[in-house]
Amino acid sequence: MTDAFLDPLPWLIVLPLAWAAMAFLMGAGRGARLAIVALAMQLFLALILATQVLESGPVTHVVGGWGAPLGIDLLADGLSVAMLLLTQAVALPLAVYAQAYFSREAGQFWPLAGFLLAALNALFLSADLFNLYVTLELLSLAAVGLVALGGKPAQVAAALRYLLVSLTASGAYLMGVALIYGVYGTVSIATLAPLMGSAPPMALWLSAGLMLTGLLAKTALFPFHFWLPPAHGGAAAPVSALLSALVVKASFYLVLRLALDVFPNLTALVAPGLGLLGAAAILYGSWRALRTHHIKRLVAWSTVAQLGYLFLVFPLLAPDGLALQAGVVQAIAHGLAKAAMFAAVGVLMLATGRDTLEGLAGVAHRVPLTLFAFGLAGVTLMGLPPSAGFLAKWLLIDAALSHGQWGWVAVVIGGGLLAAAYVFKVLRQAFLLAPEDSRFQPVPRSMEWAAFVLAAASVVLGLRGVELMALLAQGAP
Image (cartoon, rainbow, N blue to C red; front, side, top):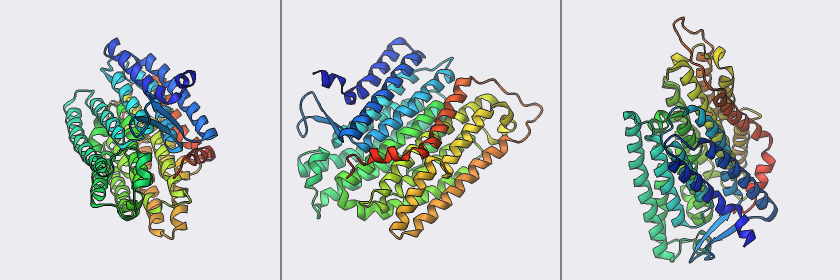
């Protein structure tokens, strides 16, 4: 009983639900300090769980004493724990940032953020396809609410578009789950894995197609990306950071989990197509980022491009694990860097009162720490050493060379050069002289430091890749 009470798995789900409900009861705009304290506890619990997985391998928690296939199991292996660590590590600095950002009026940000984090944690720990659907739907609803938080017409329109795409995608995923249950009589991933034969029935092909299409739409992979720039570019800065760093990673995690554990025989057939879509996302997203003059839209289009790298891993999946490591490191590096970038852009927009690149002239002398954080995050996106982005791209290039697939190497290098172009486009504008009539508003230092901590973490992680590789080895297929 005592061991079950101290098990971090259920607490990582219950704790954010508890503080989200308390923040809602406290009233609009309240709950920031409660959230920060609780998020520090969640990060501590995730670190404890990572230690357990490193020492003993995957950890399972049987909910209510009823295990799979009749009941619900929570499972933490190296892949899920890595995503849990990313979630808490990004959310804690962003909570400090949001406390200052929403100092006057936060609306229902804190309850929605808590429910979103609870859904994320539950998704990474779920071990059956139906619970993954439930957590994915809760995550999407919380994200839609956050996008519409400001109440502006553009935000509401973006939220409604996001909601429509999300519901359609969730419906496709659920239909796929229903087909699998009809064929095999179970939705437990552990039970399904040995049942997948080398010649799957047509229903399995159809279910895999439905589930994959729904998840690609939620991930905003090209050409399903149309909803992302308005949603991420129009939301409040803390919301944009959460969405870009964490929410789109959840559906990618599900694609990766399904490819490794549920549909390994089908993955090899669709992997080249996923790689081509990833390459198209890198090129198209980078091109759109270069052409936009709206600073948050630039960062949002950068997300479209950077998500493409995640799907380059599928044509390269192999027993050596290089591609899997590259994909997870890229997801974590992008999560930290993109959270830092959106946080830095939020500071720049508050300081200048403008949301265009032309309005950034002179900010290098006003908020140098924020601009340095933006530059550090850009180093990670470009893939320069010693950042985690460099480690991810190095692993990806190594996997491509070991398989003799030189085309992916060209895509990775070309994407890095394009990222450098749009990052330096922002930095160049920031160092220009400000017009005489420009006015700058003071910005809370906690917001600047939160952006810097996230950006620095994306670089420092590149120096600590050994521990992350050891964690990913626990429970890897």
